[in-house]
Length: 91
Image (cartoon, rainbow, N blue to C red; front, side, top):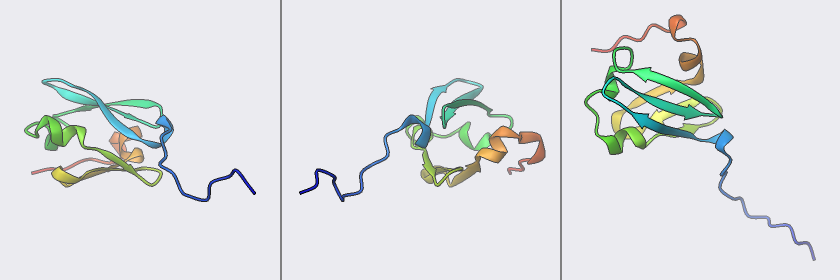
């Protein structure tokens, strides 16, 4: 008899999650895959009027898709790593 479980578990590694670690009057800090990103409201205006609960409710989907369901906001690691290559336009 094998001691190995055949059940799939939850990924708990910090490498595989997104987390907002700080919110200020000017922006927020997002931690993804062991790296920190600062998202100023002037470039990411969707978060400025959002509730704290909605900002903290973030998920990493797949390898590079970051999703805030309640805010209907999707970002990729490419956007966070190279923001000048992806001009964000919000109305």
